[in-house]
Image (cartoon, rainbow, N blue to C red; front, side, top):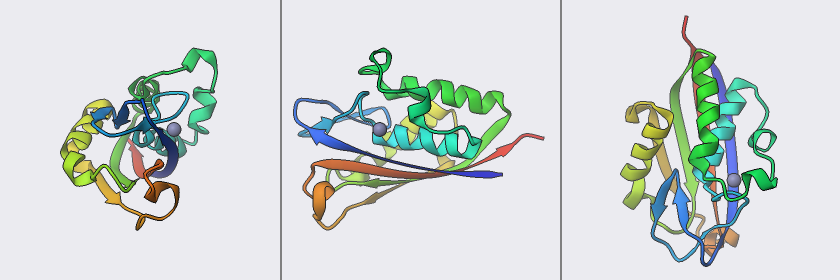
Length: 157
Ligand code: ZN
């Protein structure tokens, strides 16, 4: 069994759509980034790469023209394929979404369903927690959203 940790943060900017775990969320701003800025999927990718001991998301998706405006489910796909080809399965995935708004409770089911589909894992092994920051700093002022993920993977015998 191996554990992996992932962290990501993106700025919120106007005139961009907000995607969290591949789900389009109605909001006043979207996440700035070379890709769609999906903090949840990026943190999941880094957690899985960590558990696989295979470096980080930037190694596979550098900020080059080739990956400009890439959708994050597309980034996740080869990482997941690599995980399953290497005979691993995911034991669990625990997620902290750190933001003042949107309210996680409102979108929890949708987000978990999307992660379950994208990773081809049971919903019961996924947990999503919403954390606010008492209106402090960039996240508290709704200028950024951050995400932490921890995962555990095991190899089939
Ligand atoms: Zn990111």
